[in-house]
Image (cartoon, rainbow, N blue to C red; front, side, top):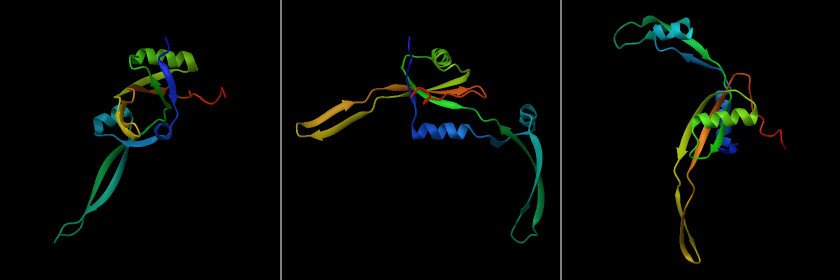
Length: 146
């Protein structure tokens, strides 16, 4: 059964994809987390200014690590599809390895407009969006079929 309705190729989705496609430099919360993530220790010095007192120089240790870039793609899927079904279908259709699938449910929004016939009320359809993260090195080319 086909769960994927269409790939999401919009400006907003492209921004999400571009943000996740760049390596990020992050800080670990504490020394224990730094060891788990393989973070590097950096010494940072700063000055503390207080009224009526001399400036005090202090040193702090910060643990930083780089988060690797990962390819993410968005799809509009059927609302009854679950993450496992979405993962299986993306892997079958695009011949890639899916690492994770995040889903978002959107409610149908009510809309109304004034016409010559009077007030027309309606409702847009509810839908489900899936953000798929691929294994490092994999990518999907939506424009290859054109």
